Length: 104
Image (cartoon, rainbow, N blue to C red; front, side, top):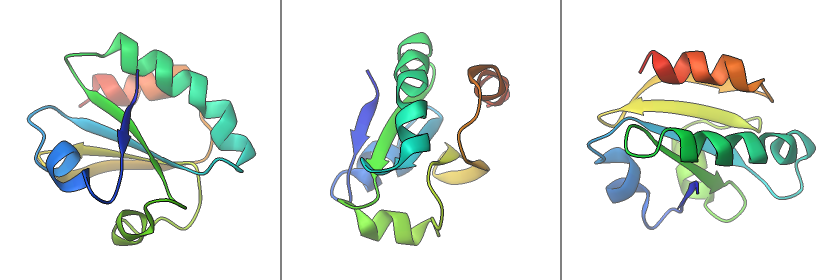
């Protein structure tokens, strides 16, 4: 299951994580975000123990979304040791995300 990130837990759960982290910045009202949700959940199960894959609701955690300059959703940020190494905007097919995950 995808991890749930919030403004409160983001620093310790994402920025200080030993594993690479993927954050899906989303909102409940966003159509493309809803399309991505099952893919994110599937990837979270598939990469468990290798990559932390989680979601951050931009409406509920606006401070973190703002820090990352999120202007459009869905946006996926790929972090290594707290540094953004890749970023994609919009709904993408699973195979594109798998390639990005494999390159982490």
